[in-house]
Amino acid sequence: MSFLYHITLIEHWEAAQRKGSYDFDSLKAEGFIHCSLKEQVVRVANSRFRGRADLILLQIDEAKITAPVKVENLEGGYEKFPHIYGPLNLDAVVKVYPFEPNSEGEFSHPDRRSNPNRITMNEMSQDEFIWFQKRSLDNYAEDVAQANSLSLTEAKAAAAKQIAEILPQGRSTPRHFFYSIQDPEGTIVGNLWWGVREVHGKECCFIYAIFVDERFRNRSFGSQALRWLELQVKALAIDDIRLHVFGHNPDAQRLYEKFGYFVTSVQMGKKLA
Image (cartoon, rainbow, N blue to C red; front, side, top):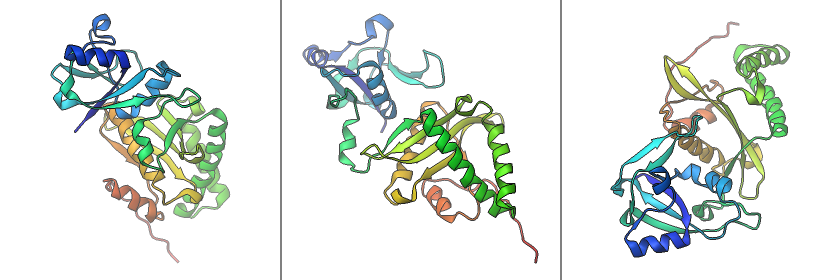
């Protein structure tokens, strides 16, 4: 079952119930009703409705919508949003959430309250990126050293060269995305770096780095970040996620296998005495 979400005024929803269908928002002006996917709606709310206390959130069963629905990009960039091209029949609305901001005017999805470990994914600031870049280089160099029987100095040089080639413009390199994973208290517990690249003539998502600090492991933070990423990738109309795992990291392999990742190739080696 696929759900769409629509933010509207309480008075518009009340009027729709009297009328028998919902045709507010941009339908008359633009020809469609703006909607969001679950992973998009909070960002839209904080961008367009910050601080407003007269809103509700409609959860809509896409399969029950009688008007045409298109998932498209009309504003440029990569992200696509669902649009309903016609009035919304009320029986497609399966839940109506009170939708009020916190004391700072920011919104969160109502179902976050049901999970005390629910994470938030936020774009890294430049300061966070600088710290993340150093830690990623150190961690990657250790893996490269172990996998290739190199000294740590040699591995750091090789790792730094490779990362510089991948990110020629650093954090601003096109089609690369950097996020901090935050727990419900706002503590940064890990990081995620992913990008869009072409493999055999087809776009795919590639996970370059995902990390949860050892102090915060075994609390589903990494699993939630992977689920969140899948939703982001679907919003870009991409159906392929890839990553690289070193052979000496079985814990990571087990996590990815749990999420349905499978081996696409294996590089093997033997150390001679």
